[in-house]
Image 1: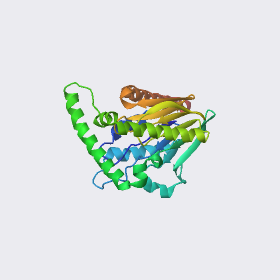
Image 2: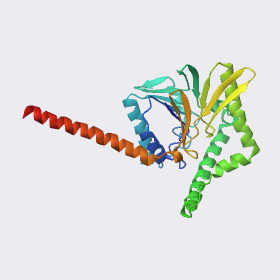
Image 3: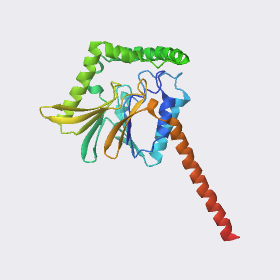
Image 4: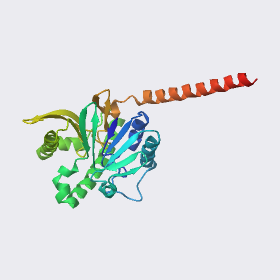
Length: 272
């Protein structure tokens, strides 16, 4: 299983090329798209690059090859909530999803329901989204120059979040509210997106404990969650050996071609 969220297709901050490389490297039984995959809030007819369209094509390709795709709606793609519980082949659109993973009751949802600015002042949240996109575009320019001089990338938005006490408090409050509600409803795991903060952390209170997970985003962190052999793992694009993934795929293709050529050769022998 793979979980991604907050891709924000249709915005300048989206790292669609890197996400496509990651998607080509996996073959999940389940693909959970945990909200804000398409940024309908900031959608513009004059900006939807081919790489962004390729992401959607890849998701459809997954569904055509026995991967169950669960698309959970977020705030930036909330227009899709009118289609909640609709299934198109092996793609299902829902607002929340519950499943059992190795005996653990797991709850998936985007998380914007706990964001007061979205619930009570949507116009302010939209302005914030636009400002965030501008900040990311500026950050890309800065990082380009840093890389030219052999320096490491720098995240302006992460620096701001970590420096502003209110932002840190908001993140902590979000995580605790989500975890407390999960514990109250007897969920073992709860998986969110929305706040662009990838994490796997055990949360507990006087009523029990649960595992809180957030898949992060494909704007800054370029992160995903994977569940394999009973274990959750945070995956970061910059830590992946993408060349090895490509080489493995080419190796599989060559192996398949070799098998086909051998079959053709044997067939000739049979009919000679």
